[in-house]
Length: 239
Image 1 (spheres, one colour):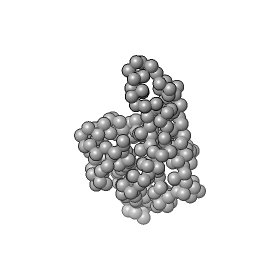
Image 2 (cartoon, one colour):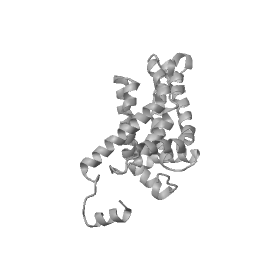
Image 3 (cartoon, one colour):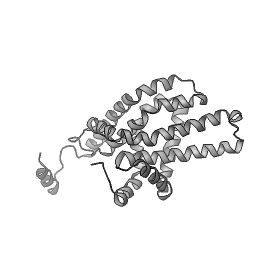
Image 4 (spheres, helix red, strand yellow):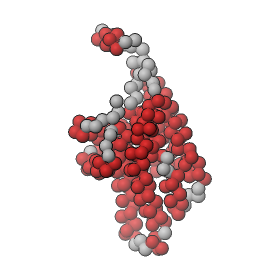
């Protein structure tokens, strides 16, 4: 059906195929499932050894190494789900995922790898406070730094996945929006708590199985931020 025909039917108030509430829910579930399968496929090389590692903080450097594929995969999931139109006649999550992966992999790794290195250093210091010479009060500071860094990287992942900015500009914007869009920061903090709770109660594998749902939740909580980026900073690439 042509765009003029669609516009004519929309003007006349006639509902098109795939526009009803059930169709939209079905389309969303389908997209989430496809994106989840692709997400698992792209993180599998790092997920398997991570699950096999002993749950010890001294393994943090290895966990960080194995988590490198997660950054581009999560970015591709964000890109694909952001472009989801809720129309059964326009379901292309497979192609959109790989397009997002190709477009964003290099830029995301410039943000993701430094974050992982920082998290590994913090985890090792917290696991061996005596050898690291970390006093008790400084351990609390390190935990707070890790939390703020995780909120920062959540903002950065969304920005670099949907918009065309240099890595240093993404880093600055991610910091800026921690304070400007406090609702987004609180929402992302809630997602971090949920992710940590799932990992603690089950395993990393279960968290990975919910990856597309968490990515969709991240998009929803970050809508106020992405709206500001789109209107005030332009360079939108999510067409």
